[in-house]
Image 1 (cartoon, rainbow, N blue to C red):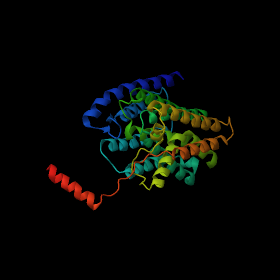
Image 2 (cartoon, one colour):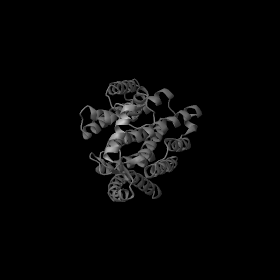
Image 3 (tube, rainbow, N blue to C red):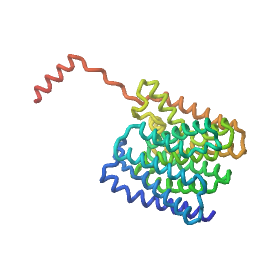
Image 4 (cartoon, rainbow, N blue to C red):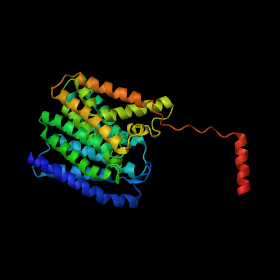
Length: 343
């Protein structure tokens, strides 16, 4: 217990220091998110990955807190996904590139001997879905980190209940690293998580949750998995429905995520993050209670119903600007005359 607390504390401090140190290089290299009101450097995710991996490997190699079988492979696969995310932060890559990379990593870590092949393939799809969902949560300051911390504690509790001590240690280290990062990412953020950190976080959480549910029934496992990641799942569902209804391409960005719509309702950036963090905590709490058998499995249906109601309500908020009408021949001629006069 004391070793776990020491490891988490070390990860928190290391992530906080690395995030502050990597901010300047990110600005000098131009690795920043320019979609927001001001450029936000994106090496915060690198700090989270380095702190999590460094502490986890150290406690495993020294024997202080052995990670156990399978957890090392999970960390390696997560590092590979993070590397793809870092490439996406430094230079633009197509969405299908990190989707394919995440699919390969997920197929590598799923425990098929416990899930079976059909359920294992579904688990691969679900890991990819949640990983992409966490990347989408990085649209607002502090949101992906806050939801990640809450989810890590919940999945870690499920791992501890299954006596997966190594996995529980890894998740506590991840939660601590995200907390250290949040010291610099809380609105208004000085550093962003980026694709590197968000993909790494989403992948580790989704794959770890699959580990904790392996061996259980497909229906009950699916309900718990959804409850543990309700906010990320709801955000993906909201964006997909919104863009389809508006006739926009699914890969075309826009201010149509959960945080964007809550801001349209008048919430402050801090208020929107706190509200979604509370929603994540509610879903995670139900998922943990159902997994431990302390409440009926019907609790996950309430989480699903609540998420669906929120999505349908937020869909009513207009977020897309009006399209400009195509220029007429007359307006084109007037613009041409004005250019001649001003030229």
